[in-house]
Length: 470
Image (cartoon, rainbow, N blue to C red; front, side, top):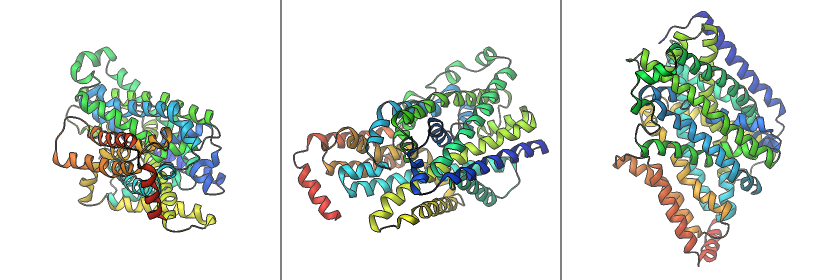
């Protein structure tokens, strides 16, 4: 644990209180479930940008980037670079088709095209991938809190989910967007200022280049092309396959607003990663024997003015809990719209209450997985979260949006089941020198392509499946 001064604590506490109050205040705009889940279709470009960055830029993009940069330098920027590319592709190719579908979730898009069975399967398997990432965010928040305070792990976990709940529980998409705007401003002030300070304290960029091995620290593929490019692509496909980011695009008041919000996100994300890279490399030069995961917090505590440092530490925590909060909103929307309503009718007046209750339940269940031996299991598999989501949903959603009525439902079902299983098997049984995302997406692409060409009995198969579902 690193000791915090009184000024650190003041800056930290004031920042957290302001963010929590912002989330609560945004809840006053929420009148019904539509306002909560899609912002009533009235969100501005800034709100959309805030919702995307507020969820996408979390622990991996800040503390995680500095941690990886400590060992591998610029190859760590793939976390944020991949997210940026994903937002760009979302804006240019997917925003209009998604909004034109008149659906609230990825699973509803799949259901409209292929029927309820593929939709239910993708809901269950896709939610698992999102849930794993929520647990990972709670663990990251706990680690940051434990590095600064003497609090017990359970107390750290309770504080973490409490912050996540206040971030999104009252305001939904609008709350995530409003708080996301504040978070983006704080991240820019904190991480980019930190990056500039790290360069200055190092004696300039030329000194960093001179002292660190170029092949390892100034190479975008320092860990190997298969691993680093795979990490970037997992973010690209993960963004396009995650309910939270699609939900943000659907909340826009019109297509132009939604596209502009996604493009703004694409433009603003990479500089945050660059700041984390320079902080990680500075820490390698000056603290060669520390735990890389502590690079960013130690830099803040030891090298930033204490009051400002408290603000930065709070911002890092907000970055982490914001991602967990946004993901919990996404998974609650899937559960309520695509799972619960498959089995029972819900009173429209109680939809908002049910959505909020689901968020609380998800966070409490996720907290259970942060205790004891379950912790190591989740940490081991958390990096697969994006890949699992993409393997389950990307190509089925792509087919529904761009190739309607042209893919055999039987092969869609096979893709939704086999693709994520192939990733899990590859991780358990093999040690590949590339991201197993390629395997999952490869199976999905092959099966969906087969479904496109073997389409002669599509109508008959669909009729049979729809009959079973009814």
